[in-house]
Image (tube, rainbow, N blue to C red; front, top):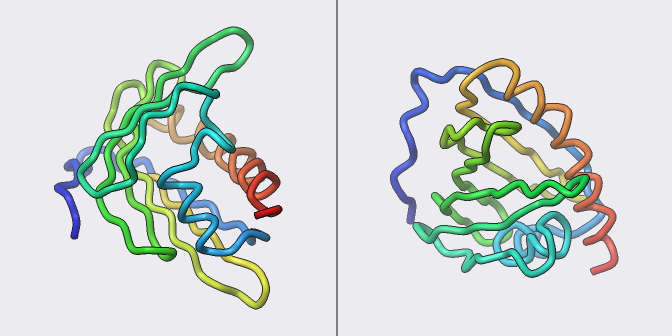
Length: 147
């Protein structure tokens, strides 16, 4: 089952990040669909069901600033794929509804996590996320590896 994705044809700024993760696909899938507050979201801010076509909200906090994140799940394949929209403010997607696609693939005793983030409004927004995602994924791996 999939939801209607935003039209990204006029926003061609995209990125991809691959990372070998210690955690299993099952643990990573759960982290992306139900447990953002374990590795990314500020405690007490997460609203998330992890179902296709359901919205989510959470905040991150950095240096006393709040950064709201909004979106909705577009496509889910248990332990294999999470696709969602991703909307943040001035320092992020600048209000543009972007799409994050995360794929999980077993590689030996590790999991290859492939993240694609598409539809940025400009190069600055893409570049900022290109710098941030590797750090975010490192945090995900660190927190969820013990599962």
